[in-house]
Image (cartoon, rainbow, N blue to C red; front, side, top):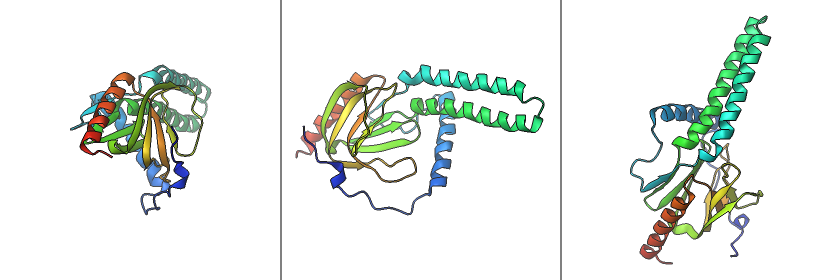
Length: 216
């Protein structure tokens, strides 16, 4: 299927929204809030949803392994820096925050699932990706496993465990802002869910229903 290159569309005009520093702080706060939600077993943004889909299972082993490495480093530095209490205290704070941050990244993937509600698919990854895709703008849906993701203009790849399992091709681009807020128009989105078959079936059914209500 041939699709129009996203580069032909003009990106959304710049707005006077939060600056990079504030966006970074908000991201950190979302990470820490995800830890609290994880402990309380509460998901974000699922109230009133038609369906939601977790997507963090495939990365669990890697994230726990990374966290274990951070813990080992913290313990090692505790002994190495014992003769210098001030430096030791500073590094201890940094190491503990790093451990919480890594755990928070995984918690964000668990507590911030993909959400289908009111004819819109909300696609998320951790605490930094949050893209709204109206079902009426979907041209094609494919259930396919992709392990290789090359960076291309107009494409958004959100692999978990190095794989994506659902591909969306859009009729017109949607904005998927970059980490610091710069606009980025995409017409192809690849994502993953723990239950990829359920995600495909549910989104496809809702998409077909939307086409009946709003035919082209």
